Image (cartoon, rainbow, N blue to C red; front, top):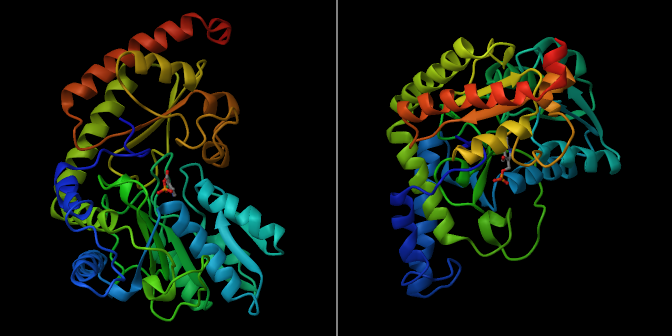
Length: 382
Ligand SMILES: Cc1ncc(COP(=O)(O)O)c(C=O)c1O
């Protein structure tokens, strides 16, 4: 139940990738037949992904994953547009792939505005409008938050960006393959995505760059990826990413409905049997598979370890921050009190979860929370 951290590679994805490690191992830049086979596979994957996103194949650039795509989008537009201005707007609830890139850009002389969010983890549009200045060159707001699943109003944000001729990037690592990301409708200029969140392999991702967007490469070498991203193409990864996207496309609505009814069952089961909880982001439009709950008087780490002993995997905060003792920056931005943020768990459901798993998890949660609260001095003082 930790599919927002990563997902297993779908068996059909693995099957599609397999020949590109062995008999079709060519370098896509080579002129001979082995190279042409690899090149055809890369371009056919690019076409598949472009068809799904409803954009041009040339607008898809393959990268080494979501983090690289986010770095490329931010550093690449900052460097290419610095004559126009040095101001960038993002939000307080972004993934660290964005936040830490912004911190680096601050050291390089850029000014960053971190927009606040409401109590459901949604960016406040009025605050965005107020933050825009003549020097603003980029707005970067994620599509779906990775801790609570809140879906951001990309349409409105994009329209505001266009009115002011500001480039708009979205980190869609959590949304691609789960909800629609149609680029003929979404007014975004740059969009990051990653293979391992949608049953594809790790270490492959992409950046959509709308035709005409001013961006410079962040790594230099050969003339790969239309001279935008140097480095020999990860052919098996690219083939796997396209196959994963094809599979997601074929069952987007049915799987979304199935997961949201499982999520609701989990939410209702826990709410009915455990008191003193807070469902984070409940008032927002949420990703169908995500549920973030704060359990008062207990620590998230205690819950994770106890659930793990029952064979259930979940996260507290995002996978990347779960080793830190800071409360989640996302829950803090939503105004969740520190003590409650420390007792928060993210469940993120996926293709192999079934109703029996949900019911088992609810039973385990009841036992675990009772046990942890019995040991909690705060609970006895309440
Ligand atoms: C919203 C978001 N952005 C970026 C990333 C980083 O992606 P990757 O693991 O492919 O580098 C993640 C991964 O957790 C994420 O959830």
